[in-house]
Length: 449
Image (tube, rainbow, N blue to C red):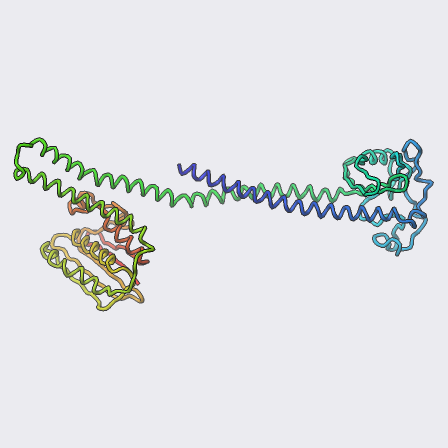
């Protein structure tokens, strides 16, 4: 069950984080893609405007770039650079000393193709020597069906391992197509995808192990609570099983002697009554523990005299303690006050004092002290006796836990007293703990403020 719960937690966590990462990566990629496209189009338009420049057109050698009627180019189509443009005419990249004034103002490799209205090549221009077939193949990659009569049309394609972007401009009776190399820009986008894939995979692996670690830590309290609940149900069933068995047995005895008088069968009735009272006490304690969790917000706390509360519990029990041949010694510092519920604190004192008396050895001694320690009030209830082994000290406050079941049943306990005391003290934001030396006795401490 807990393994399935952990796996569900892992799946939900990984799916949620994967979706968030996917959305984040897609957003970053979309923004980067749009920026690259915008910069590419700006450069395309800049190069296209250069080729549209009348001054450039008048200086561009035509004879070398004229194409035949079949659409093939007969020359390299590039300007020789013999005609120089003034640097201010270029308006940018190629205006410096030594720059080619006939070259377009672009950072990328570019070339231009002019066609007639039938898409036959009439002119080409490039800074580099290119094959005629290259111009033809590039023109074939242009989506001619989407080209309008007056609007610029942009697009991209791959040719011979190079990515090209183009813009188609209406040019008189034909078209002028400008191409620029965008391999570097496309490489940025491709590398971005690979980076996202690697980073996402690494993050998912890390998140998986982190989620597994925290899932195990999150489930641990649930598992512990579940185990305690199972133990609680088992212990409660065991506690109820014994008195029910006794009641059932005595009822059978009564039924087997129906003609006998009530007086002759009184002891069976007393057994039934005794076990019924035991069950009543057990169920009342269980209900009290359950109600304690629900009454945290409605409990009324006020400042009260802790010294008077301790004395009000000790004085009525002096006679009982004396009858059991146990000595009682107490030292109560007067007028010590704490903030809380006086009736519940009295119940804690009664539980601790009752346990101290029950588990004192023959002719034992019980000692109660109440004193102020710094800003807190410390109550200590100690007794002489067998003491509590170290392995039991951390568990004696668990419900139904007993270090010696047979001895506890002999004293009439069912293992809920200390659990109730711990619950009350926790609600008062105090501290309840025990110290013991085996063979000498035990001391229970209550710290309240």
